[in-house]
Amino acid sequence: MALIDSFLQRLVKRGTLTLTDHLGNQKTFGVPDIGFADVAIRFADSGVASYIVRHPRLGAAETFMDGRLIVEKGDIFDLITLIRSNSPWERGGKLSIKNPVRRAFSKTQSRLSRLNWEGRSKRNVAHHYDLGNALYELFLDEDMQYSCAYFTDPANSLEQAQEDKKAHIAAKLHLKPGQRVLDIGCGWGGMALYLNRHFDVDVLGITLSEEQLKTARDRATTAGVSDRVKFELIDYRNLEGQFDRIVSVGMFEHVGPPHYREFFRQCRNLMTDDGVMLLHTIGRFGGPGTTDAFTRKYIFPGGYIPALSEVIAASEKNRLIATDVETLRLHYALTIHHWYRRTTENREKIVALYDERFFRMWQFYLAGAISTFEYGGMGNYQIQYAKRRDTLSITRDYIAKDEQRVARKI
Image 1: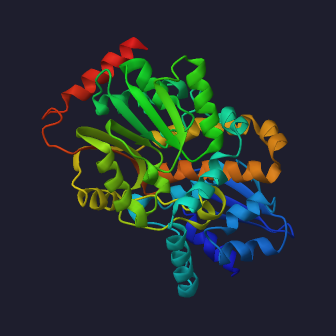
Image 2 (image 1 turned 60 degrees about the vertical axis):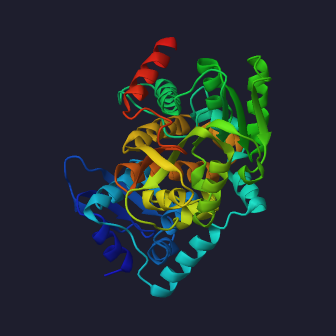
């Protein structure tokens, strides 16, 4: 039996995967099953099979990107979902590197990639976020929110869900007019402008992306609030001052475990005595892990998704009290479904901006992300922190009340 046959037999038990090799020989793996996809793929040359078997976490991605693995029935989302759904995280199934030498090498590479000193952090951010706003405008919502939305109803539009996300986060910040807010990793400025507009607060947004900085500043100027909503190109480690509130959405994934304690120490020093912080990050359901090779190489160099235990362990050492913790289990899957659909619909425009290989890479990235949040061990955490135990109400009723009040204003 060929190694690829053994490999696919282990991966596909329910649903079917039909493989046509480069000579035209066909073989089907799995059995038809309601709720599981039927997918057909073709290998364009003799080297595809061995490359996938030897590099299980990178081979399928690269051969797909290069046009050597061709999906003939369904699309790449269907292929990834078929494999992931056969081994959901809750059941303990996962892909692993069998060779101990390569497994150790992969772990070492992953750990080294997490060393995000200042210069490296800026280069890593530029790799992903400075691709050009034209790409992100094609698949994000109108406010350019590039993080997990909040679906009060799974049928809601992406725009509505992102508005609800901002309201949900703002409510946990428990804002008061005139307060000074720091937005660490401000993106294109949407959250900062939202907080100023609805809560009459002053906001400083910081980023390491020059593309994002320009857009955020232009948006503040257009809104006529550049005197109250400011944006700076600065590393969080170099910031000084005092802030009543700190918010960070989708940035902590780029900090890296070696720098977690430094991050929370800086946040605590920047907070006033009655300060509140809201951290929104992708997180692992299980314990600490490693960043997969595809993400590390092509998407987020230096990125790492933390386990909740890693976040709390680092913050508690800096005497920050975790006053509220919420796990968003399926919201990011719902969000990325919208991104994937919009990306696929804009294929010609993306190919014109970059090339066909880039489009396939981006499609693989989003498809893989959906399956990770639907079947893998990833979700989102929102962790609220305070320096003092009496800063916030002893019940969390105020969160829902503030959220509803903001929703009525929209």
